[in-house]
Length: 304
Length: 149
Image (cartoon, one colour):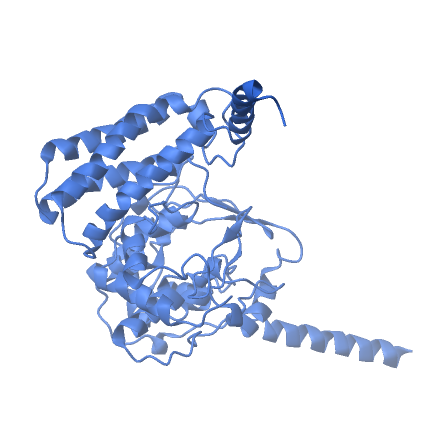
C-alpha cells in the first residue's frame, strides 16, 4: 500500500515538474540583443505599422482616440472576445503605471516572446505571435520612440477570463505550438517590394490576427492565411483579403494602396469597424510601404 | 380581358402597388440611391488622385456639383420611423445625436463648396481641397453609419 502511495506521489510530482518545465516562459537574454543604436525616428514608422495606438491609446470620452490623443498610451480599452474581456494595459513611459521602468531586454521579450518583466506569459490578444517575426532592431527603435511619448497615469484592471483561459501558465504550452518566427507564406517572388510587404503584413502589421481564422485553441490556421475569419469582437466577418476573396479579387495593386492611404474602396465606400483605425495607421506609412503591402497581398495564395 | 376604359386606371393601380412594394420614395431607398451617386461621382476623382487618369477640371467640377446637390437633400432623408429596415446602414446615432450628424453633414457641404470655389486647375491644386471633402465623408461614416458586416 505504502509503495503505491509513494509511487503515485512520485508520478504526480514528476508530472508537475514536467508540466512546469513545458510551460515555462522562454525569454531572450542580454546576449541576444544586437549592437544597435535605437533610433526613435525609425521607431515612429514601426509604431504606426504595428498599430500600437489602436489598442493602447486611452479612449477619449468613451470613444477611440483620434489625432494627437493616439500618442497617449494609457490603455484602458476593453476587448470583449469569446474568451472573456481583455483589458489593455498602459504602455506609456510612466515609471510605475506604464513601461517607463523597463529595460530594452524586457521590452524585446514582451514584444517577441510574450514574456513580462516578471517572467509571466502574456495572453496572445497582445499580438506577439506576429511581432515575433519583426527584426529585433525595429523593436528596439520602437522602444526609443515610445520613450518620447507622454507619460500617462492610471492603468487597466485584470483581464476577466473564464476557466481554463484564466490560467496564464497554460499559455506556455500554447506558445510551444503556435509561437514561431518563421514566415507564414513561402513566396516565389524575390522582388524587394513583395518581401518588404511580407515583413509588414506577417510581422509588425499583424494583419493575420484578425483576417486569418483560428483553430479551437486560438492558433492561426496557416493554410487559411488571410482568408477571412469571424469578427473576434462580435458579429459579422473580417474579410478575406487574399486574391481569392470576393472583397479584393477585383482590386488592383494601386486600389489596395489607395485604400490604405485614403480609406476608400474602389467603389468609394469607406472602411468600417476596427479597420478604420488600422487604415489611419497605414496612412502614416510611406507610400512605398503601402505599395509593398499591396504587392504582397497580390502575391499570396488565393483562398476561396 | 378588362374593358378598354378600365385599362388605364388598372395600370395606374398596378403602378401604385409596385411602387409601394419597391418604395422608390421611401427615404431609406432615396438616401441609399443618393449615397450610391456620391460614390459613382467619386470614382473619376479617385482615378485622378491615384494617377490612373489625367487631371480634368471639368470632370472634377461635375463630381463636386453632384455632391453639392446631394448635400442639399441628404439631411432631410432621415425622418423618425426610418431608423431601421430595408438594409439601411444608417446608425442609431443619427437619431440620438441629430445635431452632431447635421454638423458632420455641414462639414462635408462646406468642404464641397470650398472645393468648387477654389476651382483647382491642376492635380496639385486639387489635392488640398479634395482632401477635406473625403475626410468629411469618412468622419460622418465613422460615427453615423453602421460598420459593414
